[in-house]
Image (cartoon, rainbow, N blue to C red; front, top):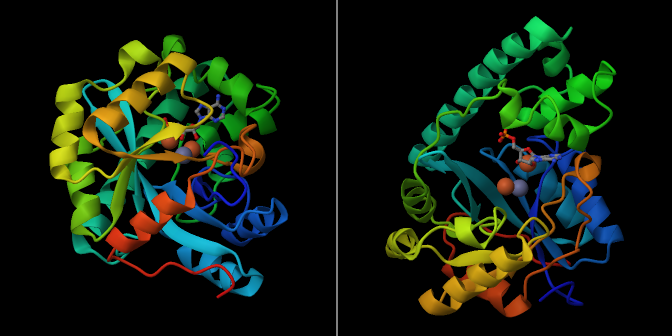
Length: 288
Ligand code: AMP
Ligand code: FE
Ligand code: FE
Ligand code: ZN
């Protein structure tokens, strides 16, 4: 699974959300990395699919169009990957639009607060986004870097954007249960992203995982650099306990994160099961 020869990288981001490359560039980088296929999973949007599809057909890369849905359980942010959803499913279209709008107004409030203490304006953040893209803390980080206030994204997240500094706030998001249900309703296949990132003791409890399984959860992203060693062990235990599929990915964000394409991948058998279960949209087969 880990960096396996012909594994598929099932989690990547483009500029349509908080990656730093266009969807076509992400595809081209995946070809360079020698991957057979990737999933493009921008936060709360499918706006990068058409360009990625075109690039995949042109280069012969396999493509699973996907989305990373922002959900929340109490104080906890939970990301749900949805593969091969119908991008025109009315419920999904409405919910992702609502989340993107909530992200935008939240980002504006965060910027207003930071702007009291630092020379940061909303226009500086907008300058770091492409029109219609999903706005997040990474774009605020990029603006702080462009202004010379922070040195890079990671430093901004450890500095001004760290929750303990008091500038950030959460945004509206559906529950993970609703998110998993919505992805299935849209014909997609739901997988929990980096569920072990906060360590073993903060992995979702068995009661919640059982509810997610009831809603149609397909798998757990075990192989992801942000899962801690003991978090990953716990997530693997949950996958075994509930008979869930195990996936791996890079969560590539271009130059916005150190994560490299293909650093973790998903076994071809698991990808085949995703393709078999999905009904929302067609993938691009490698060499198509
Ligand atoms: P938000 O959803 O707006 O709260 O921002 C969270 C996003 O920021 C995640 O999707 C990550 O891609 C990104 N992120 C989190 N931590 C870091 C970091 N240390 N460096 C760069 N990007 C990060
Ligand atoms: Fe991200
Ligand atoms: Fe995520
Ligand atoms: Zn991601």
